Length: 238
Image 1 (spheres, rainbow, N blue to C red):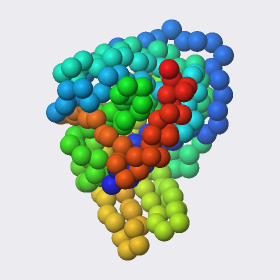
Image 2: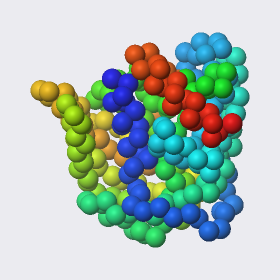
Image 3: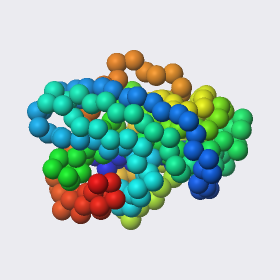
């Protein structure tokens, strides 16, 4: 279920964008983000790096927006800087966006390191595992150069060699200038014949209570591949 959880997480990154463009003038904005990893095992991690990229294999230096050390008790604190690359908002069928000229970042990805290698990622959620279930809520962070609203319902389908993943998403978001936190909640989730996954959920600016920061380790069955990906990430972010 780890890959499925990560697909749901990446949906945050893919929601708003339609075409890429580099922000011409840096915006004066920063956001201090602090927390403690729930049920943290000492020495599991030594640092966290935050990017606005949703690609596990190709991460460029301009995607880095924050980094920090992790304490022995799992505590962390860093300042999210203004992203240098923003993308044009809007363009997804089914959404009514109040200002389609708004420039936004991809939702942040929190990469966890141990001895210079990416070992997993950090998620703010109400689950103790990486499984998707009804009622799962995930918090995400994105940056915008102006205020806008995004409302409506979208549907999407991803097909793979021996499975598929369909999602219906309801949006009721108000994004303000600067850094924003918002929540995605799974309203329904099922697995049909032939590993056909079906999910519906809601995006909202209201933050669900009792969310906790969780470390999600990469699956051991894909350790060699993840180590290779981790080395690619390490190359760009050190």
